[in-house]
Structure formats: structure tokens, C-alpha cells
Amino acid sequence: MAIRLALIGCGGMGRRHLRAYHELASRRPGLIELAAVVDVVEERAQFVANEAAELLGQRPRVFTSLDGALHGTPELQAIDLVAAASAHHTLAVRAMEAGLHVLTEKPMAATVRACKRMGETATRTQRVLSVAEGHRRDPIARLVRAALVAGVIGEPRMAIDISTGGGAWLSANPWRYLKNEGGPILESGVHNADLWQFYLGPVATLDGRVRLTEPERFFAKAPLKRFHEHYRHQYPSVIAATAPDAMLANLTFASGAWGHWLDDQGAHGPRLSQNSVFGSQGRLDIPSLRSGKPLTVWRDGSTEPLTDSELLAAVPEFHLDPTTAEFFGGERLARYQMTGVFGEADRKNVALEVAEFARAVRDGTPVEVGPAEGMVAVALVMAAHESSEAGQRIAYADVLAGRMSAYQDPVDRALGLLD
Figure 1 (spheres, rainbow, N blue to C red):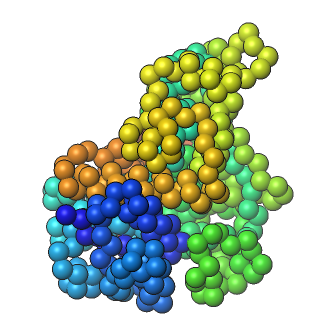
Figure 2 (cartoon, rainbow, N blue to C red):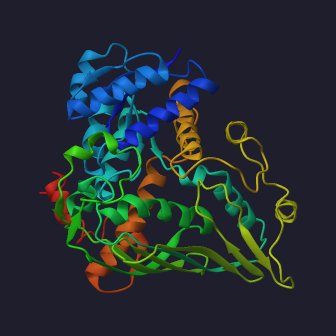
């Protein structure tokens, strides 16, 4: 029997999840049923319900609140939560206490304390709580991890992750630039935080600095992020940003490896991106995920990077799980060809998240990114903010445990999590 779920949030990410349902329906028919869509703005919910009717052949019920969906949708079993991060803990806790399972988009929540509240509720209610962290599910991300574990470049010693660009433009939801909503570094950087530790293991200490470089964000003539077109008329022409939009952090991993992380979303000029791991016997460059582009791997003693076949030969244990292999067309992929960053590969990665979640609800199987993993990623981003607030290098464990929270405390008060 299909898992009956409600989609909570009908913005751009909600529309991307809708396309993942369509992908899943073509490969796993009958696994899920979209019974309801919810958005505080009814116009957006009606728009997505109409899209669902076209894509899935059935129009879900429309509600403007989670409580409305809970009371108005028979036999509802789960929610797919794609609302603003600041609302995740409230909505997830309400759903789990009502007996529903929860798949929540990243970031898991806006603060570590909010993540803890969600995790504690999942344990108490014995409900599935899965975090939709899709970047690590990309076949190329799986290959990165396999190559590092296999020692293809020797012992990892240092990694760099640099991303700059955006200027003062407002590229997506206005709320993402507000401190009490989590802020832009958390919204996008939580992917990087998850991947840092997926690739290199736990972080021990870090020294971070954050700042707000563009206090005003402009929408007029800004390049619009895909799937947000249906409510562009509701965007303000300019907003006052309150959250840091630039972060610089130097990490030390438990292994002894170093990491240098720069995320500047207010930088002007052409975008710049580099993601590399340096080892004792070579270097590995990681392309933009969901692009399908291959890794570039140099090993000592060679003037040319490894070919795809040479790289795969160096990781004989690397195999994608059967579902990913089916969706992407092979179990040992060094590259793939699909359309657009927010196109086919994105749709498949989200479909993998939803499929895993549905199996967990139906069969009791574990999810890869649960409450603990989701909180670890949020805590790493927040650790850079807490280090900046303290003006010193800090222990990551202190942020994860809630012992350092000066930056987050005002946010938690605004969210009703702290008196």
C-alpha cells in the first residue's frame, strides 16, 4: 500500500520534490501517494496542486496549515517538509506527536537546539525522521568517498572548499537572508558541512569568521532561481538582510587533516569555485555535484590525471547501491550525462531520498541521514558562527553539545526555544 504523505511547503523546493515524486512513480509505482499540499499562501498551494495533477494524474487536497491537513486528510502517514528552516522544528514536532513520520529538507533546522528538539521527539514518538541531504547521494560524491577510503591519493592532509559570487542580488526566497531564519550560509553551506564530514570524518576544532557584506538585497532584474517563478510577483524589490552572507573557516579534523572553507555569497564579479583534497600521494579535484562531471585525480609520478578506467580500477570495492545504480544507469560510474544542476540529476537525487524514506516507514529500515547526521551538519555551520562570535578557535564538540550558543541564543529566543 502506498505511503500517503503531505507536502508541506510549495515554494521552489516543493516543486523540485514534486518532480521527484514523478520520477519515483515511473520507477516505483505505488510506493507513495501525494494526498495533500500545504502552504501558508493558498495561491502557491493551489499552483503546486495543479502541477501535481498534471505530473501525477491526481490532484491532492489543498490546505494552508499542517493542522488543516492533519484533520482533513484521511489516513495520512507522513509529511515531506520543505518549509523555511525556522519552521522545521515546530512542524516536525507537531507531525510526529500526531503519529506521522517526517522527511525534512536540509538544513534540518535553524539552530542546534532546534535540531535537538526534533531528534528527541523522534526518539520519544518512535517516528522516522529523515533529513533530505541529497548531495552525498550523487554518484560522484559516492566515488569521492570511495577514492579517499581506498587511499587513491594517500592519506588526506588538507582540503579546500571555495565558493564566491552573488553580489547584492536576491536570488531566492527573501527569508533566507534573515538571521532568525537561519541565514544564507546555513541554507547552502549545510551541504558542504555534510560533505566535509562524509569525506574526511569528524571535525575537532575550527576558527571561523562570519560577516554581513551586503546589508541590502535587491530583487529587481536579479537572476531568478529555477522553480521560484510562480511567486516572483510576491517578492519585495529590496530587503534588509540581517544574517551573515560571508564565512571563512579553518578546520582541523580528528584525523589531523586541515580544511579551508570560504563561502562568500556577497562577492562581486564572476563566480569562483574550487573543491579539492590534497593527500600524501596526490590530489583530487571535485566538480560541481549534480553536473555529472568526473573527478580529476593526480597521483605522484604522473603528469596526467587518471582516466576514468584507471580511477575505477583503483577503487575495486566501489559500487553504487542498486536503487542509485538503476536511477543513474550503472553501478560503477565515473561520470554521467544529465540535464542541468536543477534538472534530471537533482530530480533523481531527491527521488532517492523519498524512496529511502518510504521504505523506512513501510519496512522499518534505517535512513542514511537521520537526526544525528542532520544535526552534525547544522552544528558545523553554526560552529563557524559561534567561533566568530567568540573571536577564537573553538572545539566543534562544544557547539554540537550546546555548550557554545551565543550566536544562536537570540535566534532560539525568537523561535520560542529559549526563554
